[in-house]
Amino acid sequence: MKTAARVLVAGIVVAAGVSGCSSSSTSSTSAPASGAVVEVAHMAFTPNTITVAAGETVTWKFDDRGTPHDVVGVGDAKSVLHSAPMKEGTFSFTFTQPGTYQYLCTFHPDMRGTVVVR
Ligand SMILES: [Cu+2]
Image (tube, rainbow, N blue to C red; front, side, top):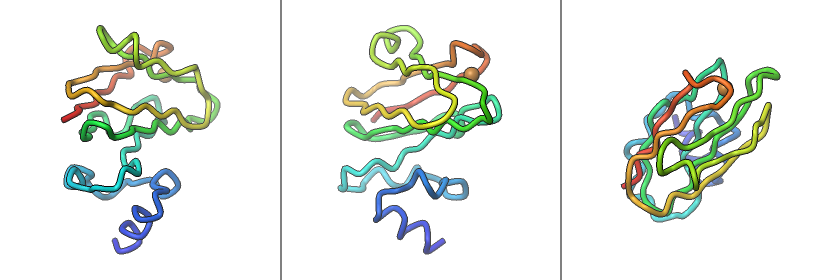
Protein backbone atom coordinates (compact mmCIF):
# COMPACT_ATOMS: atom_id res chain seq x y z
CA MET A 1 0.00 0.00 0.00
CA LYS A 2 2.61 2.55 1.02
CA THR A 3 4.79 1.32 -1.79
CA ALA A 4 2.17 2.43 -4.28
CA ALA A 5 2.37 6.02 -3.07
CA ARG A 6 6.11 5.99 -3.42
CA VAL A 7 5.90 4.66 -6.95
CA LEU A 8 3.44 7.39 -7.87
CA VAL A 9 5.89 10.00 -6.68
CA ALA A 10 8.56 8.44 -8.81
CA GLY A 11 6.23 8.53 -11.76
CA ILE A 12 7.00 5.00 -12.76
CA VAL A 13 3.60 3.50 -12.40
CA VAL A 14 4.24 1.28 -15.36
CA ALA A 15 6.81 -0.80 -13.57
CA ALA A 16 4.62 -1.36 -10.57
CA GLY A 17 1.56 -2.56 -12.38
CA VAL A 18 -1.15 -0.76 -10.49
CA SER A 19 -3.30 -3.78 -10.01
CA GLY A 20 -4.78 -3.35 -6.60
CA CYS A 21 -5.61 0.28 -6.23
CA SER A 22 -8.43 2.14 -7.86
CA SER A 23 -7.18 5.11 -9.80
CA SER A 24 -10.44 7.00 -9.61
CA SER A 25 -9.35 9.12 -6.68
CA THR A 26 -6.27 10.61 -8.29
CA SER A 27 -8.03 13.21 -10.42
CA SER A 28 -6.95 16.08 -8.21
CA THR A 29 -3.28 15.31 -8.56
CA SER A 30 -1.51 18.45 -9.67
CA ALA A 31 1.58 16.72 -10.95
CA PRO A 32 1.46 16.20 -14.71
CA ALA A 33 3.20 12.86 -14.40
CA SER A 34 1.09 10.20 -16.00
CA GLY A 35 -0.63 7.82 -13.68
CA ALA A 36 -2.99 6.06 -16.02
CA VAL A 37 -1.82 2.70 -17.25
CA VAL A 38 -3.79 0.18 -19.24
CA GLU A 39 -2.31 -3.28 -19.42
CA VAL A 40 -2.66 -5.08 -22.71
CA ALA A 41 -2.44 -8.74 -21.87
CA HIS A 42 -4.47 -11.93 -21.92
CA MET A 43 -6.44 -10.65 -24.90
CA ALA A 44 -7.86 -7.75 -22.93
CA PHE A 45 -7.38 -4.14 -21.93
CA THR A 46 -7.16 -3.82 -18.16
CA PRO A 47 -8.77 -1.76 -16.76
CA ASN A 48 -11.38 -1.86 -19.43
CA THR A 49 -12.57 1.65 -18.66
CA ILE A 50 -10.24 4.29 -17.30
CA THR A 51 -11.04 7.84 -16.28
CA VAL A 52 -8.47 10.61 -16.52
CA ALA A 53 -8.39 14.37 -16.33
CA ALA A 54 -7.97 16.43 -19.47
CA GLY A 55 -4.29 16.81 -20.21
CA GLU A 56 -3.43 13.52 -18.62
CA THR A 57 -1.52 10.83 -20.44
CA VAL A 58 -2.67 7.25 -20.73
CA THR A 59 -0.03 4.62 -21.30
CA TRP A 60 -0.85 1.23 -22.75
CA LYS A 61 1.58 -1.43 -21.69
CA PHE A 62 1.76 -4.29 -24.16
CA ASP A 63 2.81 -7.67 -22.84
CA ASP A 64 0.86 -10.61 -24.13
CA ARG A 65 3.58 -13.16 -24.74
CA GLY A 66 4.15 -12.45 -28.40
CA THR A 67 0.59 -11.75 -29.44
CA PRO A 68 0.40 -8.42 -31.27
CA HIS A 69 -2.20 -5.85 -30.34
CA ASP A 70 -2.85 -2.24 -31.13
CA VAL A 71 -4.95 0.63 -29.84
CA VAL A 72 -7.20 2.26 -32.41
CA GLY A 73 -9.95 4.70 -31.62
CA VAL A 74 -13.52 4.05 -32.68
CA GLY A 75 -15.45 6.73 -34.56
CA ASP A 76 -14.09 10.24 -34.14
CA ALA A 77 -11.27 8.96 -31.99
CA LYS A 78 -9.89 6.92 -34.86
CA SER A 79 -8.02 9.84 -36.40
CA VAL A 80 -6.21 10.73 -33.18
CA LEU A 81 -5.81 7.51 -31.27
CA HIS A 82 -3.87 5.04 -33.37
CA SER A 83 -0.93 3.01 -32.13
CA ALA A 84 1.33 0.80 -34.16
CA PRO A 85 0.89 -2.96 -33.73
CA MET A 86 2.94 -3.98 -30.74
CA LYS A 87 3.90 -7.23 -29.08
CA GLU A 88 5.60 -5.53 -26.18
CA GLY A 89 6.47 -2.04 -25.10
CA THR A 90 4.31 0.96 -24.41
CA PHE A 91 2.14 3.42 -26.28
CA SER A 92 1.20 6.72 -24.68
CA PHE A 93 -1.41 9.25 -25.65
CA THR A 94 -2.25 12.54 -23.98
CA PHE A 95 -5.96 13.33 -23.95
CA THR A 96 -6.55 17.06 -24.05
CA GLN A 97 -10.25 17.15 -24.91
CA PRO A 98 -12.90 15.94 -22.46
CA GLY A 99 -15.07 13.18 -23.79
CA THR A 100 -15.51 9.46 -24.02
CA TYR A 101 -13.07 7.67 -26.25
CA GLN A 102 -13.77 4.11 -27.24
CA TYR A 103 -11.04 2.06 -28.80
CA LEU A 104 -10.35 -1.47 -29.92
CA CYS A 105 -7.61 -3.76 -31.09
CA THR A 106 -7.82 -4.21 -34.84
CA PHE A 107 -6.35 -7.70 -34.60
CA HIS A 108 -8.99 -8.77 -32.15
CA PRO A 109 -12.06 -6.52 -32.51
CA ASP A 110 -13.57 -8.08 -29.41
CA MET A 111 -10.83 -6.38 -27.42
CA ARG A 112 -12.34 -3.04 -26.55
CA GLY A 113 -11.73 -0.34 -24.04
CA THR A 114 -12.87 3.11 -23.08
CA VAL A 115 -11.07 6.22 -21.88
CA VAL A 116 -13.22 8.82 -20.17
CA VAL A 117 -11.61 12.26 -20.12
CA ARG A 118 -13.04 14.83 -17.73
CU1 LIG B 1 -5.43 -7.65 -29.84
